Length: 344
Image (tube, rainbow, N blue to C red; front, side, top):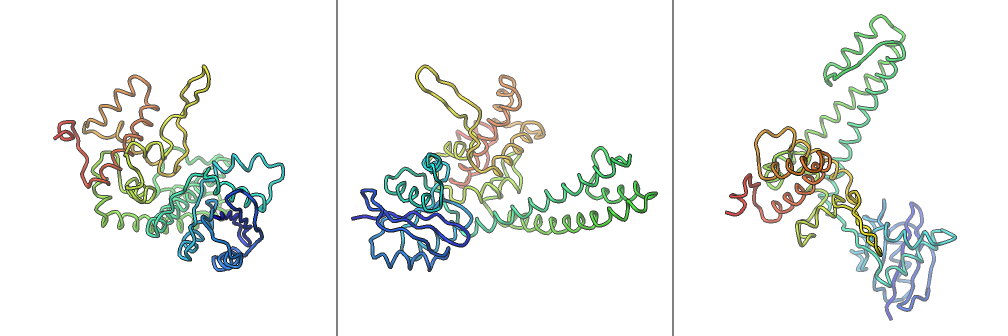
């Protein structure tokens, strides 16, 4: 008889539940959130394990790899579908969550989450760290602007990163106490800016050496950041049988509600990776508004903008960009500017 395991992982302990193919709970308990402890607990049960389900989360990727290495058929599942089961529970505990995961694994009512390779995870960490430093730098700049505004000192308009500190010092020249209080903020901003530059340089070096990124950058509007973010998010182009599926995976296709006499399309689902979807939107906007050279893709986007407005056109072009980037990655080609080149 087959047995299915549900793991509800927390930082210290993991709730474990084992059910048979009829849904009967055979064994349950807890183990430390370490691969060795979980494997030992399952081996002590002496039961043949068909699948082990883990809800994707902070430790899930690490446990997934270690359990797979130990010979267990571990699967990371999407929490959004699991939420449909757990939200009906009147009492929510780690024990009940583990039971729900085990039952979901038994009936097959789950969506498998793709676990990226080690290199993609490292590059994604680099991009996240770069973004964090940039956001904190902007937060400090906005805080300085707000503080100065209280005293009637205005840092308004577009100020370059280089002259921001200089203009702040000039405004506070006659306010020594205010300048002394702002000085630590400026020092922290300078440190963030310096380390952000280090990470940004690392990103550019990686893109410069990667042939796939270079081919993706032949697409108008696609720069180094867009190319490397696309690679780290998709990870493996063979995951998608059709390039058009990438748009839906990234949440760039409309929702649909059809029931009885009602049949309507809504806004885009936004169910995919937020970082890549945002960057693709920016790339599409640059393609439509800043790229001077015309292409079949830009002409199509401009026609959509005339019919439906610029906002919807940018979203549509962002979806097209995802499809084109996947196809270029999959077949090793470069961007074709005209339809004649595409059909040649």
